[in-house]
Image 1: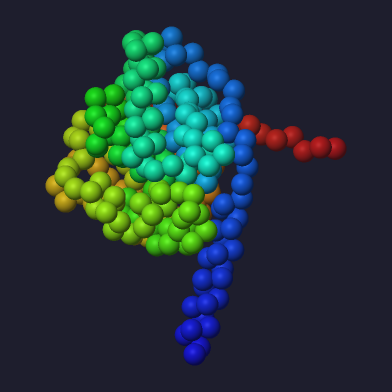
Image 2: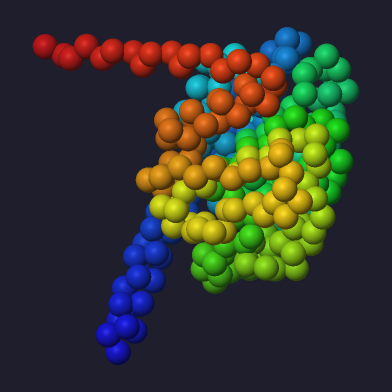
Length: 265
C-alpha cells in the first residue's frame, strides 16, 4: 500500500509538470529577419509537440549573434499551431518548404537543423526517410525521444483525439520501430543532446542507438536541464554552437562575454 501511495504521488507530480509544459499559447508568427541571399550557414529550428515557434526566441537570438542564418516553419496542427500533426506528414511539409527555399536561393549553404523534442524526430525522419541527407549537414536534437517516451501515454489520454503523432511517440510504436531501422546517413552529423533531469522525455528515451558505431552519430548528456530549458539553457547552447561550428568544419570561436548589468541606484 505504501508503494502504491508513493507511485500515485510520483504520477501526480509528473502530471503537474506536464500540465505546465502544455500551457497553450496560439501565437505562432515570428518576424522574418534572415537574409537568404547571403546565407552560408542556414539553421532551421523545429519546435515540439503542443508548442510554437515562439519558444525559440532565446536560441534564435544566440544563433544570430554567432552569425548563423536562422529560420523556422509553421508546422501547423491544431488551430494551425501546436505541432500536433503526424510526424511523417509534418516532415513531408518540412521537405517541401526546404526544397522551395533552395530553388529560390540556390546559393544557400548546407543546412543545419535543430529540433526540440518532437521537432528532433521530425528532423530525423526528414533526413533518414525523405532524402534530407542531400541538404542537411548537421542535425542536433534537444530532448528528443528517439526511442519513444513513456510520457506519450499521458499525451494519448489528453490529446490522443486531436493528434496522431502522440501515438507515434509512444515507446516502440510501429512508427518508432520503423524509424530506427537501418543506419543513419553517414554524410550528416547527428547529435542527440539529453539530460537525465528531463521529465517529459526521461532517460533513456533520447539516446540514439549507434549499433554501426558510426563516427557521425553521438549522444551528449547535460546535467540539471529540464525539458523546457533545452531551448534557453546556456550550457545547452555551448554544446549547440560547438556542434554547429565543428560540423561546418570551422574553428569554434570564443564565446562573447555576457554583458555586465549595472545595478539601478
